[in-house]
Length: 136
Image (cartoon, rainbow, N blue to C red; front, top):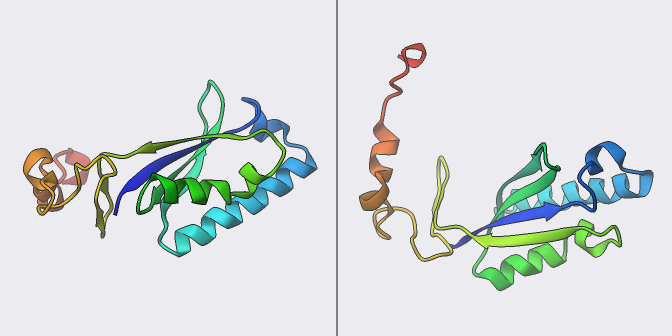
């Protein structure tokens, strides 16, 4: 199944530090929504990014196509609010997780059946040993 990078852009760069009570309530609902999607397997991971240029949130969406990813975005309480959030949804070429290989939204795919192992050394990733002395 294809994967997409979701980026939630808040209304201002210092949003995490300057949220008012209404915005905080929206964010509580937003986190609950993404937590539920993660539990359903529709989101592989999500969380805030502390970029010095301005904080934002990311999520890795697993969806049939970009339209399905957009529907998940449209149901997000942060987007439904009047707080001024914006989003970007970008297709991922591949998504590698510890247990489940997902196809990339760009058609590259993951796993031997889609060529990822041949082109990017995916099979070696599973058997490689750490080379750093602290991990020996």
